[in-house]
Image (tube, rainbow, N blue to C red):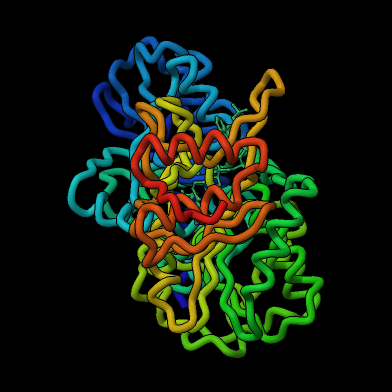
Length: 447
Ligand SMILES: CC(=O)SCCNC(=O)CCNC(=O)[C@H](O)C(C)(C)COP(=O)(O)OP(=O)(O)OC[C@H]1O[C@@H](n2cnc3c(N)ncnc32)[C@H](O)[C@@H]1OP(=O)(O)O
Ligand SMILES: CCCC(=O)O
């Protein structure tokens, strides 16, 4: 067997040397989520005064504010773009240091193939193995597409990155890489599940009523889908499966309690399929070298035709608000980008196409703003500048702590009635009045 350590040594360099390849005007990709570079980012930031118009692109910033943003918050030298906003990104965008790039997540690999230039790629990865392979860690997502498109590929090794088994496209070979740097080995960011409220629990209970033995579960981003996962773990359901975009701690609960076996899956039987993971060390330890988990690129996990090959796919996602037409916004507050389209529409569509599948948009009836004022998440119509994440034609179940409403096959007045029926009781009268004004209320409506 070839010995790859000489090749490794020939490519091993310092972060300062490695980032010297970046030129003004370049597009630099930072890998997504926990794969974003740390020492390479720091070294690039040090070159601020000699560089201009360097565009950096990433997905959902973790490990704190990138150094290129810290040294250049007004984007005079580095322009920081993001395919998906987490809590940090929306704050950076508020201050003009980060720009959102809309993405239908299942398509992002095609964007790289067709529309995106990558001059230099920085990826945080696992150490090289005896076969000369670096595992890309817990974000297969579009990492391979970044590598394929990049003119120069630079890896930053982190000994704490879990080794995520595939699937496919979960590794890169030393021969495909230009430079390697050994990083600071930071521990991975810890994202514990949010503490559920009583309303979250009620919503989760409504979802649970719809789930049968053998269902295949997708949990979305945000607090509530995790609560559903916890309740599933405590249920007496049998032989659940997992095919999801994001892997979270709740899947470990389900696996360890024995409810999740993957035995009834039609594809990837017995495997927990995902494209990126975010959670606590318990999740990262579970994934590490565990053949039960299979990481795939996002154009596999989020491909609606792949999703639909499993039966009884249950897609459980959160939203910011919904209007009386059934249009769902899960990513903005007016013109403020909070999150992203991500894979929500992919799973809503794939679940509906799955035999026996269902998709659930779950949201509390009210949102409390910073002053503590309750604002209904069920609104007459979406406000100016608000983005539609899931069009009304795609939405199936909508669940609040006041019940369930089905949107599919319903006319406008039926939708209005069903949604007002699960709105907070304090908002119902106002919503009925609005529905009347909008011409989507009938005298015979039952509320
Ligand atoms: C991942 C998969 O497997 S696939 C599909 C999943 N992906 C998606 O669904 C993408 C879009 N969805 C999401 O990103 C999330 O589900 C969200 C944003 C809807 C909810 O996520 P959570 O983390 O529970 O949201 P949270 O309640 O913390 O609110 C996030 C921000 O939005 C703000 N916000 C939430 N609701 C509203 C509202 N109705 N009006 C105004 N602002 C609001 C909050 O104040 C907070 O902003 P802040 O950090 O500045 O205080
Ligand atoms: C990057 C996509 C994350 C999500 O789907 O929410």
